[in-house]
Length: 136
Image 1: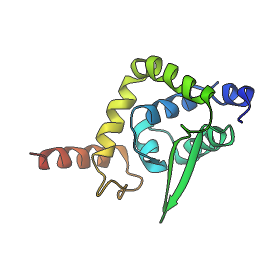
Image 2: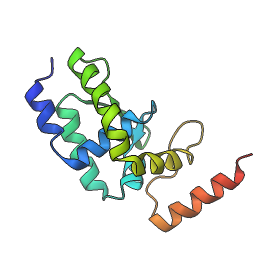
Image 3: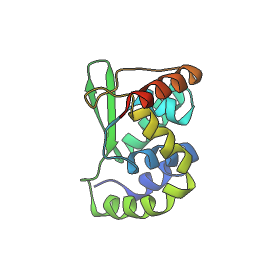
Image 4: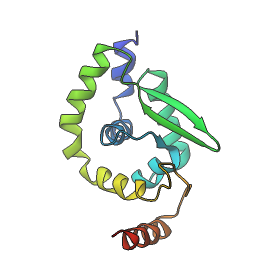
């Protein structure tokens, strides 16, 4: 079982709370580049925080080609199950802008997978606009 002290230490940072909130907003596994584009933070910073969350037992990671996809470890323990329920009720409105950006970023997927990689913010806005125009 994961140590509760490690879990709460890992959650003691705004960026890590924002990352956990992204996972709570979707049932999709998320790749690092999607989180980078959504939060507007550098890749090295996102990766550092993902490592801390993973080491605390909050995340699982899977490699698919060049992308690494992360997801919440929802099967680990009753503590995590209860904690994720509480966080989902309270973080969604605190970090609502992140959830909106994530939805837009996930719209760029093809066959449910990230194919874009890291995108500068202005180019990302153009891609999202183009993708939205394609929708019926």
